[in-house]
Amino acid sequence: MNLETLKSTAKKMVASGKGILAADESSGTIKKRFDGVGVEDNEENRRQYRQTLLTTEGLEQYISGIILYDETIRQKADDGTPFSEILSKKGIFPGIKVDAGAKDLALHPGEKVTEGLDKLRERLKEYRELGARFAKWRAVITIGDLPAQAGGIPTESCVHANAHAMARYAALCQEADIVPIVEPEVLMDGEHSIERCFEVTEKVLEEHFEELERQRVAPEGIILKASMVIAGKKAPEQASVEEVADQTVRCLIATLPKELAGIVFLSGGQSDEKATAHLNAMNLLGKHPWPLSFSYGRALQNAALKIWAQNPKENVAKAQAALLFRSKMCALATQGKYTDEMEKERSY
Image 1 (tube, helix red, strand yellow):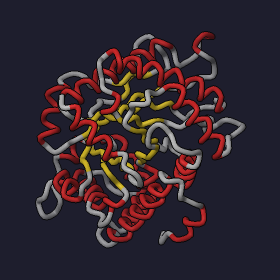
Image 2: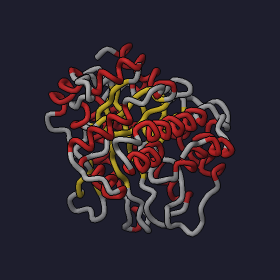
Image 3: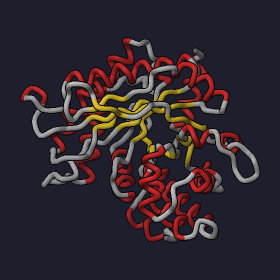
């Protein structure tokens, strides 16, 4: 492990005014996205769409890294240049999703545990040779109607199982000189209040960082991909942008080591504008112990995908313009410089 290399890469990933594009949709997820816009899901269409995103001119102004899927990191552009090489030449770090997805946790109805540790050391070595400089592993935590002590979820065993797997993944990444993004996502699904989300998120983060410490993972070589502290989608009372920002920052300060390289947020199904506004509000609260940035998938890609799907051959430039605009808005939000008025400038 070269700690200086890890620290340098992690620091650049959360550089001021930049964030991460999540383009690591699994085969099942990208099929859902394509079905939603009427595009046939096949390898060539997936390649063409990813090429549209990755070759966007000027994207490096706002994007420091792009998370890729196994298929994508092996693909090439029309001219034969590997996608990872295109990104590296732009000064964008190629990243790779390495988990095998969330599976049912035995004897725990309604709960999941992420798999993918088998042969991970060997896979990381290959991914580094393919150009990857960081990786991502996602755990999913569901908030039930009842707390764990009353027989609800998440249970302590679910949180611990996911934290232990996450820490082992992160240790293997650092061993391979690959920066691990750790993503313990507390899902927005459900009717829970923002207070309940705070309680669960605090527990989840505490458990994950305790396990990371046990596995001797260096926090200055980690990026946390965090979910925001927010009420469930079906909650009767939704918090304001300012309350989400305040509760999220309070939770992070209460649980995370100051040595952590940085935090990027997932959008988790929020609208493009709401995800941007929440990030902006957090950065308006003042200076934090770590950079607060973004690692959005849908909140960056939604508009671009819809435009591209209307005419994949003719709408490449228009789709790229939409991606560039959303990336710019999010980049401004990392500095607390975003306003709703800026949305009027978009071309879509």
